[in-house]
Amino acid sequence: MIRTLAKSGALVVCLAALAGPASSEGLENDYPTDARVDYVFGCMAANGQTRESMEKCSCSVDQLAAILPYDKYVSASTILSMRQGAGGQRQMAFKSTKIYDDKVADLRRAQAEAEIRCYRGGA
Image 1: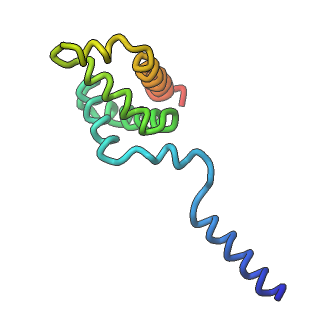
Image 2: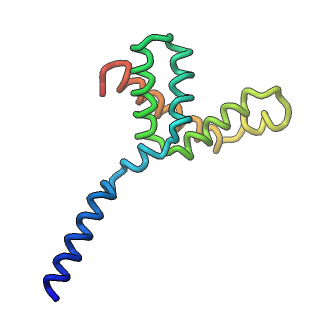
């Protein structure tokens, strides 16, 4: 019986090890590949189409993912897109609502931190 429990315990430990760490690493990996690629393409369009730019932009999205969960990134990006619309009541609602301002501010802070880490050698 003790042998069986020991084997079961070892199995649980092995399965836990295979499952990976229970830390925040899961949050860093919750950005889908297409979202990461889209971010890097946009970043490179703004910063140059060079290998160095690609490396810094890739670093930037990795750092952003480590700071801001994907659902918050999507919310803030959507708000920014709606603010750039053609105008009207909907656009005004997205421009003048504090909760939306807070979500965009979270994204801007995360982007600033990622820039410091990746572009200014703080990583």
